[in-house]
Image (cartoon, rainbow, N blue to C red; front, side, top):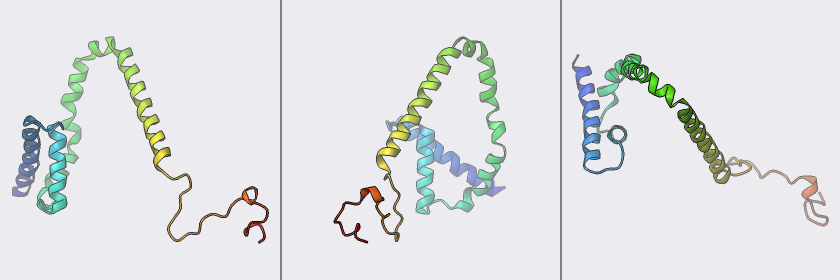
Length: 139
């Protein structure tokens, strides 16, 4: 029982710390900031996995119950959502398209056209790429 309480206290402490830092002017949402701080603390070894593992597993097992208030709230907002369905759908389509295009173009720009694995020779040139008189053409 104490393991659950300690883990819950650690998780809530990082959530509250993130919220406090957000209120002090850090432009990142408190929950996200708390999660980042928690990750850094675990990476640095300040928080041990054993301290929070039981509580995290408990919360993950019952995650569906944690989404019930959101679902009920959306059901309560049904008339408003149905009046705004066209605007919501349009904004979703535009934002998904923008994310897909940005990711694809950025990937094309950043990634090499031909992956080269360490230890492998460069691929041989195609026959059409060989110039008469070059060392490769004589082979």
